[in-house]
Image 1 (cartoon, rainbow over the protein chains, first blue to last red):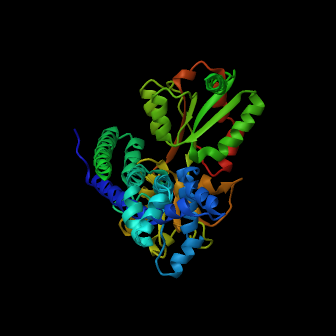
Image 2: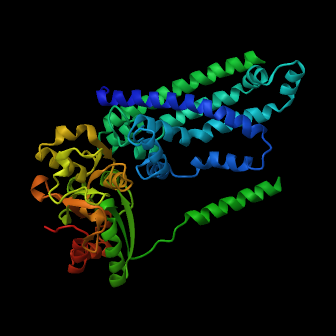
Image 3: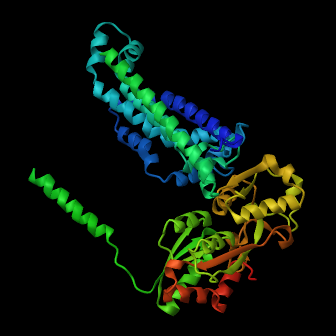
Length: 228
Length: 254
């Protein structure tokens, strides 16, 4: 039985870091967006919803390629980051985070949006009659009621980022310690016919993910019952 | 109840129709290394025209094809990016003994999308006036290995470490440079050559003594040992017409 090489351990760490940062950012972005999508009556709501779902349609490596174009020296985003003295985003961890957030956006927005929609406006109206202000209604009524949706969003966003491959391969440049994530490391081992190392990493990833998901579902199940 | 059932049956029949593919006589199924895609298109068209055999080309990395062929992938001929994978298949009895030959010698080039950045002696490499340099993973891609050998041979390997980015294939490496995200890239001359001319940017054709030769080899797979179409294709690949096309895309021949 072989053990993990330092380079592989590094890839594990970067993957966990990327998935955590991406999930946190997604929660911050997806919550207001899902709220707006669930309650807005604007005519362009459908368009926004469609744009959010688009990453599901585009092949990941192609999405990565377009991000490479956008963030590159001749791209709109690239020119902006250069003008702001932020340097270039491709081949950096920050670039990976942006790619991952866009790529996993539908997985975070849709469960939360569904939860907000399923709750309806009635609980909020009742809270309003009890003189809860808008922020209070959102934090003490809407958020707890939408808990299952949030749990699903967290699980999907985290798991989807761990398993992400095409976007990070394209945008990352496979730099050890900076942008080489677990999926890319496994892929490299397979391609190089180092099947032992690949099995170890892939097996570890599956086992770890299973345990994390199981834990989340168990914890979620308990708290839902508690909430009722 | 009857409507969903009928819909289900219709879907099943439709699936069967979609999944059955008619077998075609006189057909060659080729697994071709990505770097050879452009010449392959021309060669395949000419071969179809002259022989009447149909050609089906699958493009990909040699390592992937090797793994797929070992698991029984339906290919007749394998055109790899190096000598190693075809030799392994031969040793494992999956390729016909003595059918292996070098169909092209790959040429490494240092390329930039920016005109004037790369000089014709490649001194830009040592100057450090660039931000990022891309090369293909040396463990996976023969051109990546050649790039590493070149930088080592020039004594620059340590100096460039902080500037390196790695593509999983030379196709991706090319994309890094074509989008301007990497200022320089080590790629195959064939990638930027059309009709014997380099079309864009600036480049330096790396002298052959700086890296080990990239001997792109073809092999007849055992499953197609008695197939006339596959044998005809291999013969055609050695013909003058095919060789002229191959040279036109920036390859040499042994």
